[in-house]
Image (cartoon, rainbow, N blue to C red; front, side):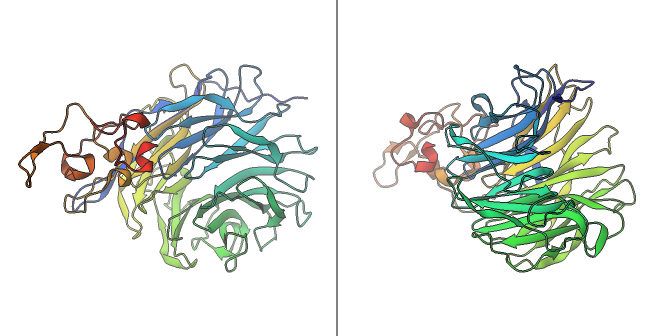
Length: 493
């Protein structure tokens, strides 16, 4: 019997917010929104859920989710591309071509060129309880080949995929399965490596080395040629549910042994997430039951690029009332980490965030992400891009008259006037000047002539900023034809 997408009592939206990191001189960083939260999904009948987002170094991002479609109310996988200022690129599109039964739990990864990979779980497609499937896309959103099965072994259930791309475009998919290398009914974390063209390199392999009991809820991140996989399960020393990790090189060769992440072992530890900076240092976050003497908090542990713990495990959430759960983490090109999670501190669930510099110090207090607070805002995901820029997506119940949406907010990092002047192609998008009117020219010292300054000649303090519009007298992001000949290729994109 065909199962249907679960009905909801209230309309649910997928919402998104573009965020920026605002850095006051001699003060802590703060997250500030770029524009208003916005709905991601166009089709708004039925439920939309499981949002996931990926952002590249140019600020482009892709949001994927599972939801009902105009053709039927079974769960399918859908996506929407956005440019670096948060404007939709093309219409909402369907990812999966196999439409029997449900497709859910999507994940996405994107490279700096704009090519991206979407993976998801498909019920019954591999002949058993569920398999993992993927679809490659070019930078213009065109499917590259057909959807393909990721899991080599098809017996029993395969669930909860995650995916990350390295600097060459090669990617690794992880998931949890009750079959695979061990042919065990217990769930283990399984992975498979692919080239940038989607060609599988070998068969699937086991991630966790401790195989007693079940290991679940994997997540993966990549930077350069290093991958880090984290997972929860019956890992030593915490057999009630701990967090483990394994590092890999570009060939999927293990870098050292399996890491035990959590030091606090009372109660369960679950739903891990990981982000890795350009130097290979990484941050692992997870939900920890009983950590803050209430219904649960968000824990984190930093590691060097050699997999050595930096400092001790610490609590991320500053507010400890009620439940804090389902954390997700991301890092921008400048090395600022952001953690987002569900918080019940205000009564109903909201999405909150907190930043941390690469030195390890938490910045400020918990910051509310969602502006719409009626109903429930849950299941966030976050992605980092250019220095100071992030996008957060989540599911919003009962917002407007739509089903599920994603809200994104960009964060920007205001630099000190004492810092060096940046060229246009080195500026985060939020740092590009806007042109309400031309800048006042100044007199040339050599010839006494008055000439208009180029954007890279303007003092940083004079560069105007705007939320979701980016243009200046001589350089326009929206039109390659209007870019001056001195602009870099990055500025013309």
